[in-house]
Length: 489
Ligand SMILES: Cc1ncc(COP(=O)(O)O)c(C=O)c1O
Image 1: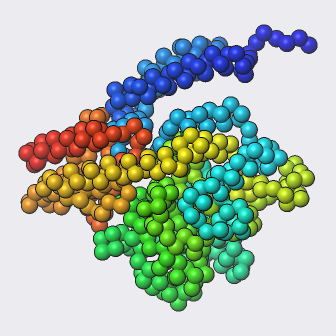
Image 2: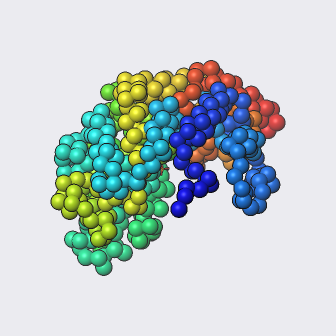
Image 3: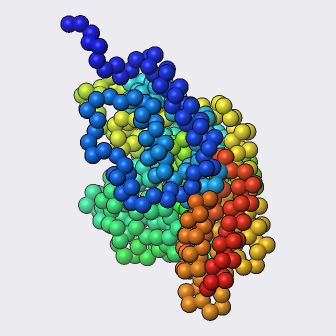
């Protein structure tokens, strides 16, 4: 048989030429990113009207496709990397993260077991140990201890896998028929990822207790409230087994008191998980490390490097104190995956620490970020955003028409426009209208939350391109739109 002249999907010279074009396209995108409306202004279904209804039969040129990206795809993109993006939490991109992603795509390995690419497993172990050290995590969380770190796709997967490990651990003790009696605890500020994990884990949804918080604790979980809930549940014959605490809640970056909560979980033999998806990154700075004091008492700890750590999505870092609990829950050992290194217990097989079998070489991008920026560069990145958020907080504080709605701890400012005296809904509609009108400008993008029944605006600083001038313009837009709304209300 002769080699045909047909499709060459991985020809090195074609790759070189086309990848250069793509890099140029992306670099131009970043150069002009401020020209796009931050929040995409398209209507649902817009793309179906612009693209054909069948896949092309014959190959097209990259230039042709890139023209469509420019004209048809980019209008439907919300620009998370825009310096005027202040919504949700940031999802950092960086040159280092991007290069790591590129390399990972280039190698395109599937690293489920050590043997499938020893470097993928070993680099992951090394960078997670590096970061455990930078965060001053307890020795058990290192690969040389009883636990270790693993890269998950998202914080949702992280909480799911530890919840499953905790579930199976307690069920081994009390019997599988007790599944309907297991109780999970968290504050009412906890991310909905926990509820989803409980649903997937087959737990009784009514026994996922989201304990009430209020402004008296700055929306942090009270250890007394937790203790009382546990006592009541035990008295009713239920089995408390899991606490998810937060360092940096999604609504307002509330920080739960880890040491005091740990006393309660220890006394009741409950798995203690910490969700520090956003704020964990800040804890590499000595001045913010105290927010995770007490972490030596917890069973698992999670932070998203893809949020505020210059590592392109997705890259969620999970450390566990006892890796056997995770492996006991998640490992399988089919014949077709058997190999000497795994059978001899000489290596880590990360397939046993996660839900899927296949896994990407994600540690490359984290390694690239750590090497090209260093811990010092990352600390500067974090501090810069926190300083800009403090500045924005000051601006809000100077305008008596607004109030700050929760203390600012990291780089998120929660605030609202004060309602006029005759307001029937305590200004909730007014603030909703303010949100809609600033986002409709396309010049900035912010999002909202509800705290103690009040509709609150969230201003999250964290995009790598954001500078003070962007914060100033954002505040000016907010003030102008507030003036217009107050005049018309
Ligand atoms: C505190 C917190 N936990 C969990 C999540 C869920 O993150 P992921 O998308 O990585 O599952 C978020 C998302 O913003 C979050 O803010």
